[in-house]
Image (cartoon, rainbow, N blue to C red; front, side):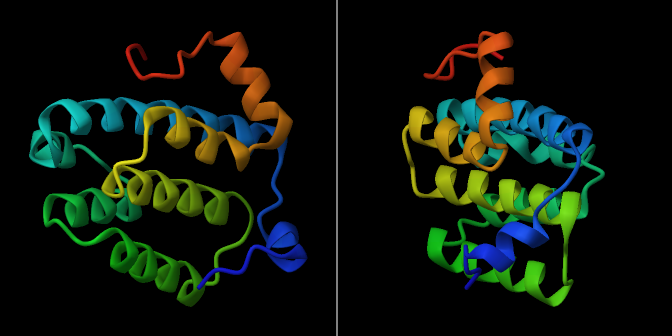
Length: 140
């Protein structure tokens, strides 16, 4: 439903600071992914009470409710389009959608990692290297 074309590329542009915030979001999503892989979505039920971001909270809840990956993607992409998101908000929501769809699809941690970092361009890979993020999900 979202078309990854030049118009999308223009709409998702944001500052380096905003991208860095989204990198920190990826770190949090990696943590969630690790928990989900080990214990299942229900393990995030308590964490869900402390999530302030409504879009992220809804995404986690849909995982707990076992929404199918493609249906999840369609619902969240529709919300992104209806809310007419741009810039940092669009980037955040796309990253959250990709992360949860990847988890629901049971992608490998490596695939999950590359999918999310791709939205930050060269900066994302540089920051991941600086942070010494492992690619299999054992730490951070």
